[in-house]
Amino acid sequence: MSDNQSWNSSGSEEDLETESGQHYAEFSGILSKWTNYIHGWQDRWVVLKNNTLSYYKSQDEREYGCRGSLCLSKAVITPHEFDECRLDISVNDSVWYLRAQDPEHRSQWIESIELHRAESGYGSETSLRRHGSMLSLTSAASSYSATSASSFKKGHSLREKLAEMETFRDILCRQVDTLQKYFDGCADAVSKDELQRDKVVEDDEDDFPSTRVDGEFLHGHNGAKEKLLPVLSSKGINGIDFKGEAITFKATTAGILATLSHCIELMVKREDNWQKRLDKEMEKRKRVEEAYKIALSELKKKSHFGGPDYEEGPNCLINEEEFFDAVEATLDRQDKIEEQSQSEKSRIHRSSPVLPADIYSSIGTHRFAEKVEEMVQNHVTYSLQDVGGDANWQLVVEEGEMKVYRREVEENGIVLDPLKATHSVKGVTGHEVCHYFWDTNVRYDWETTIENFNVVETLSDSAVIVYQTHKRVWPASQRDVLYLSAIRKIMASNESDPETWLVCNFSVDHENAPPNSRCVRAKINIAMICQTLVSPPEGDKGISRENITCKITYVANVNPGGWAPASVLRAVAKREYPKFLKRFTSYVQEKTACKPILF
Image (cartoon, rainbow, N blue to C red; front, side):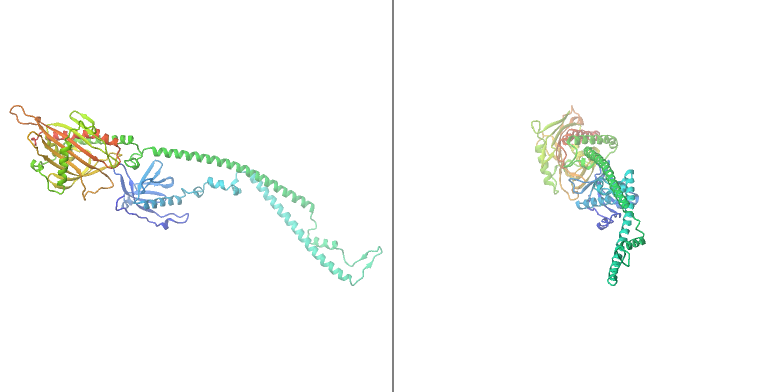
């Protein structure tokens, strides 16, 4: 993520926390998106709206349409296990690798995405009900005791029994109303009879009753029964058949109980059927979940070419053998590209002025002069020593006059790549070889691993500070290097010693080329030491290129940085350094073939 990362949202957190059924506001901002293994992470304008995540190259290009979009309905959002700023969003085989400015912004994006997914009805426990589908398995399992009659519309027997229950209820209601009216009428009649009897008793106290012939007393009013019947008759309820009503009531209640028993039996059977269906669905869901876990595990094992999890790093998902194979494949592709472009380079003729040799033999006066002199003396003293008897050096390549040695050294847990190569080339001098190795004007003509370079500062006629980035060899991270390059002529101590030229390149720091997040900064200490050997010409002939031979000693100590496996470094040493020496010396021979000898 760049330092000028901006964060923008068209809706605040209060806008996002809306009530159910409302749409959440658009959420947008800058995220770094993994593009490919060449360009790596690039800033993109990302918009979250209507359950869809879209990205644009920049905010200003929104009017031209998005460059890609993902529907979040079935997306899987995975915060990275080690990178606190990164989140991965996958839908089937499509994966977006995104990085926020900091962990807080990543949390805001994840929260916003989940809110949009929940608002659209996905990812929540009530999603099935919200979309009008059948009840979820959880709710169905917990609501059997409260199931309504509408849940059994397909059960005709149960529906008929429920209709019978309605009929029985109507009959009971009518019977209860009839009995209630009768009992109310009886209560009224009894109350009136009691009042009448009280009045008769008061009259009897004044009038003595007459006696009939049979000796019975005669009163001036009717009996209680005679008075009660007219009252009930006036209410129209003295024709009730109590025995019939009781039998009907008993039959109705018996029918209700029988129907209820039948309903309960049907519901138990239906519940058993639903339980079996639920068990089958749960078993099916369990199998699907297991299959999903297996598929997800296999997907993680599968290498997504170009993905950030499969490039060089402490948590790289590919093993050392796969890393080596990937590097080999990338180097092969680069070789094919170089072969196609080599013919075009050969047609370009660049001028390369050569200064007098005396300029290169003097010690400079710039601020790095003492450091350059120290490096030159160390290389002259130690780099020219024979390595044949040193057990620490391993011979990895031997092709004719060329031999390449290497040894493995660790520094702070990082495997370094000390290398030493010797070679003999006829027809060129040490001055010519070192001149073309040091001259930045012809660097692109023979160096095929450089993506771009520039001279940061010219210290003197014989010393410059150079910044260069090398072509990326996936899955290794891209490397850059900032180094001081100086060319020197080493004066011979006596006439029998050969003429020696040296170019030393060693890493320095410079304010105009600070380290960046795009590349891993490598540290180097390299020397190209060349000695010119001259064989006497025949007779009076002058010295020609057939009489001269350049003995080359190339020494390289490279701290690659990062986490490159040791096997990859060995592969580079075995494959690339011999190719580099042959390519470079062939270039020098071609450039000097028709030119005067430069001692």
